[in-house]
Image 1 (tube, rainbow, N blue to C red):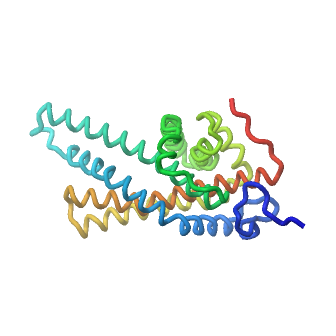
Image 2 (cartoon, rainbow, N blue to C red; image 1 turned 180 degrees about the vertical axis):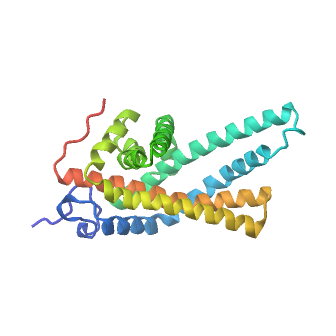
Image 3 (cartoon, rainbow, N blue to C red; image 1 turned 120 degrees about the vertical axis):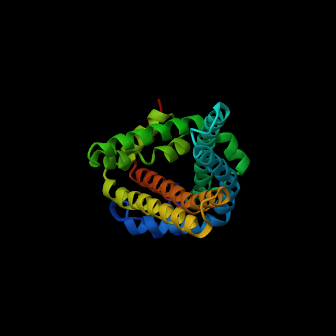
Length: 266
């Protein structure tokens, strides 16, 4: 009898990642995230270093410009502040979007058993503008939701946190990605909130600790700002990216196993 896992499941024993009754199990999710991160750390961490060292330099430079004394700065200095801020924001947005594509390629190799896409292919195929628009809309929606007594923000987070990886997997538009995220996360809200919401809070606390610890150890200078920015990004970003991508893939697997038809892309 053929006991191979169904299409879309890793070459590993599928029982290791299965949850009863088509549910998104907490233990299953944490194990999957940890396993994929360990498998792909040798790929994800060097890429993160190569990416966030120059982006950290831009961020540190923008911070230095922003600390200029308005009374002593001339017009050229203010123009420099604006240009530095714009370049920093644009670089960060493109860098995060590119790294999301890299993370999805790595997770696909571990979860699906497919060969990982090359860096060059990721550079060519990532939907930069769609992902940037999606990220802006998600951030705005989350901010508005949190301002409306927190609970609407948590609901928004749970429903749409997977929109970005789904946009990459399904090769769809921004609206379809949000719609598909809402459909896939239906019935799994509390587990997603515990896994990804909890990781979000831990990442935020860890970021604060690393920043404060870095300033205490290295002082407040351009070099220390650069080093702290790089360390925070390399420590936090790969874990979060893997967790979101693994959660998206797991829900897609559950949908396939349940016989759910593929999403309609408008």
